[in-house]
Amino acid sequence: MKRIARSALVVAVLLSTAACQRESTTSTPPSSASAASTDAARQPVQAAANAFTVEIALSSAARERLVSKQESLIATAEYFGYPSERAVSERVPGSENPWLTLHRAQVELEGAQLDGTATARFPAVVLDPGQLAWTDAPDAPQVNINVYSGRRSAPDNLLDCGMFQDTHAVAVRAPVRISCGLISEPGSR
View (cartoon, rainbow, N blue to C red):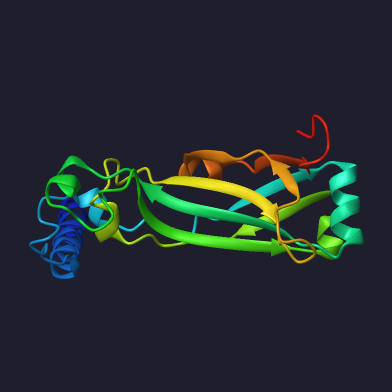
């Protein structure tokens, strides 16, 4: 019985040692630019779990106009972070602006996709850990979502839509809902 317990202990120690060696050989030394950033900031936001959807509720007049004019609907997502004090003091490009853009994505819907509630699916992304490190909340990037017409039938946007701005994690939790009506429609949203 003691021999089995000792064997189990030896196996556990060997597995633990192997895991530690594997971990130490796979970590990369921090570069001078990111040495001050935290370990969490150096890890990219994982793409596997950060895709999200936007459900766009069109008024009947907006849907009719888009379909009759063969107009598309565009949903955009801008992933961003507010620049950290360090980014501002070191004059990181873009830190003179109110936010640092991390990624942009666009989904265009048309025709049959505009029946019922239009759904824009934003695929998963991997955000650059170096860029995230220059934001004031590297573990909580923001996303701003806007919706407008594709400007195929008219030079100007036809829609008056709500918008969404919160952390990317909030957008991932449940479908983002945005209502749209025609700009010319009274009380469209």
